[in-house]
Image (cartoon, rainbow, N blue to C red):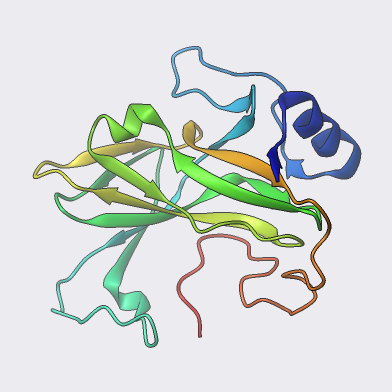
Length: 184
C-alpha cells in the first residue's frame, strides 16, 4: 500500500469528481492553508457548527446520542468552550475510489493551539461531506475559522481492490451531507 501524490489527486479530482469543490494548489494568503499538497489534500471546514453543551447534564451515549447536547451555529468563526468540542463538516464532498483508503490528520496550526481534529478513515467506495470533530483541549475558548484549512487527507492505494466497499455494504454514513451525528 503506497501513498498517492499530488498529480494523482489532481487527476482523480478533475476527471472523476473525487473532491468537489477542488482547489488544485495550496491556498495560503491570510488563511489557514487548504488545497492540494505534495501527498495530500488540505480540506476546509464549512460554516456549519454543532457546539457541545451540557446544560442538561446529559450522559454522552454513542448508542443514544441526543441532538439537544449541541447548539447549532452558522458562523465564520466558531468559538469552542474550554475542554469541549464541536462538530463541523468539510466544504468539500468526497468520492473515494474502490481501491483507496483515506486517513485524516489535523493541521499543525490548530494542533499547536491545543485543538485536535479527529476523523475516522474514509473507506473505499465511501462518499459524502466529512464530519469533523474539533476538540479544544485547553482551559481557554478556542476559535475555528470557517472556509479555511482544517485537516489533511492522505490517500493510500491498496495492492488490489477490496471485495466489499463501504457503498456495497450500504454503510450508515454513506452520502452524508451536512454535519452528521452518531448513528447505530
